Image (cartoon, rainbow, N blue to C red; front, top):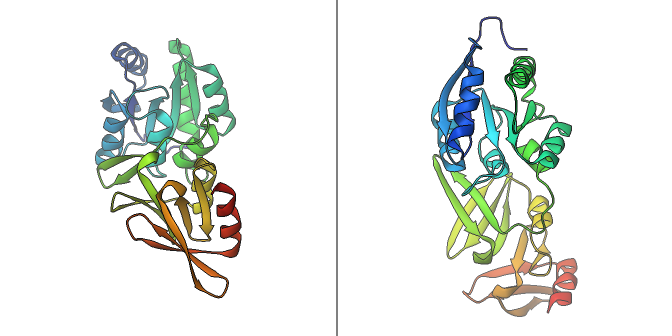
Amino acid sequence: MTEPGRRIRAVIVDDEELSRALLKEYLAPFADVEIVAECADGFEAVRAVNDLGPDLLFLDIQMPKLDGFEVLDLIGNDVGVIFVTAYDEHALRAFEVHALDYLVKPFSAERIGRAVGRARAGLEDLKVRSPAAVAADARPAAGPMRRVIVRSGPNVDVVPVDRIDYVLAQDDYVAYAAGGKHYLKQQTLAEVERQLDPARFVRIHRSHILNVDRLARIELTAKDSRAAILQDGTVLPISRSGYSKLKTLL
């Protein structure tokens, strides 16, 4: 529960100006809620969280550029989330995985009051339910991912999956290799493997996922040991199980 007298510093994120204005109007009577920023898209939201360190996001799900789920992937673990959506199936799923609350458009002033109450009571539990965890559980299944969103400080890179050459595990991170650059993101290789199209990407080693379109040839490097040679000359190890999976796509 929030400390008595503590102000909740909130950011409103919605691409519709009218929705932002209405939400701000409904929040005005709550003296302990301070609106520190209004954002019209996901990129602005990520910058606001990075620069201002708010306690709470009122976050629209359906937005251009970055959607609400992609924003959650990028903002760290210290922000509470109340989803704002016109799509009830998304809202119900978000509530099931313990976002602080959800608001289905159109919402009333009374409903905002209940959401603020839940925020006051629930902000202490952020260490249990991080925004990234909420995003992973609440995002509706929509087939293989089409792009990777990576944050580096205040900057956000959007990498189309078609550009990815391979993915490399590096401790608690993965590195997406694309066009000679590496984009680091804090997630596991197993998570990446589940999100990529299995008809194009194959885990050839415990530390490597390969885009089969980039494969130039396979070389035998030692007895029962093989390596993938990519079109740009990159050499990646292939395990026995990885070779078996790779053969099914060739």
